[in-house]
Length: 153
Image (cartoon, rainbow, N blue to C red; front, side):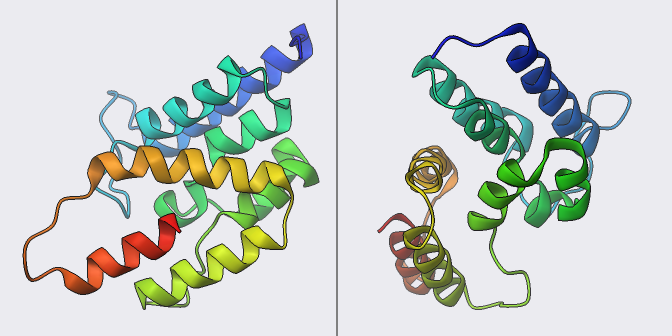
């Protein structure tokens, strides 16, 4: 797939939306619900998809995929700015913030991805691979290890 000028404009718009949602004016990260560098993580996932010439909406969803759960962005704003197709992909890879149990959240995401398109599964795989860079465990972290493995299953 060759990207058009409109595709690049929309991708750049998503990058700006991401940075505006995560960074303070001085370039430091806002207080987020994650310790990982969210902008760098989201862009790495998106750039892998760009290298494969993947669907524009999938690339945009990759850029935005963690904003709801980690930056508190309202999903309705994403829909207004980027449309229903992007929003559906983002929703499908977003953990339900009403559940605190990591294993339960992981199982829900797996089931949701299985009911979704191949695009959702592809994004979830790239996301999981990149997320693995941030996991470290101590011997007491058995439940956390189990939750991470279920997320990657």
